[in-house]
Length: 244
Image (cartoon, rainbow, N blue to C red; front, top):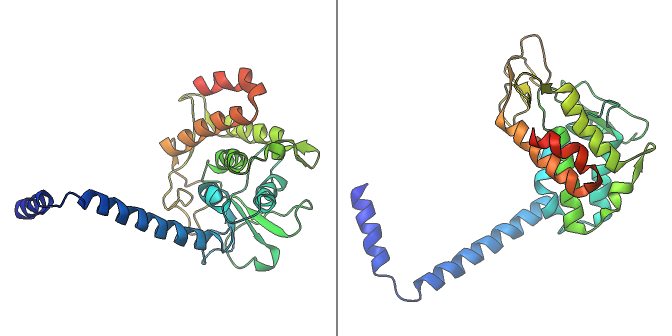
């Protein structure tokens, strides 16, 4: 290891004056190549990959800004609205949705709604990031497209702005631990949405090992900040919750 380090330093010391510029040029070329490949991937659709038929909210939140470079804003908006059409009366948000005709033998307890007959939804109850992911994705949509009208779009008689607050309220009312002052979920692996205590691993069971993890709570803090940027009129109500 020491020999490799010495050789590396020796090579670095013999670089020509234009070496840094050449390296920077190579880096820029590599980044351009990688970005183009990434655009090719997201251009294929909104699912998590070839092995998935579903559109997942945590994935969509991850790549929506890149998708905005290749898709019409209205299509991006429509994908977000599907999640709101599946929103539960208590404010909860599904993990993802898949075309009804593609529902297979997977272990999901699929959710159906007359508001969105094209798709079947599902929710991994072991996870606590779906609501936060949707709030974040909406802000990214507004920032990348400049279209803030989504906040006022009505879904089953309720505006998206109000539904965003419903999503945050769900976490505070159904996933908040008063003793620790933080939200909880199950002990999970993979993308944080699979527990080992069950064959399928996506539902809370009597064998679940509960956890208060950094990820879920950090995602909620980001979501609260994002919500207040989208709906600043609610700052008086939500800023104290965020601070606490």
